[in-house]
Image (cartoon, rainbow, N blue to C red; front, side, top):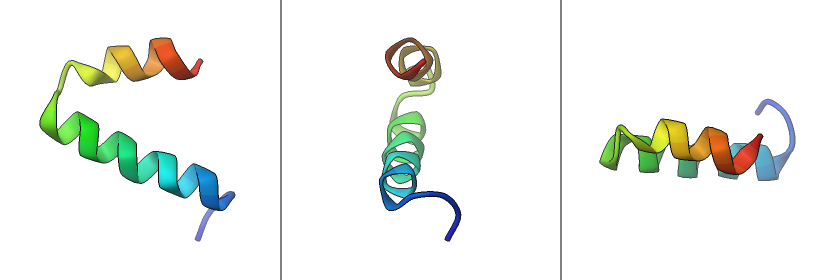
Length: 33
């Protein structure tokens, strides 16, 4: 595993969201940066 467990959980959530909603990439950047 790379990074902290919460980072891994966020990455899993991110992948799930982007798979369902390609536009979520921009939303995720806006929310997490």
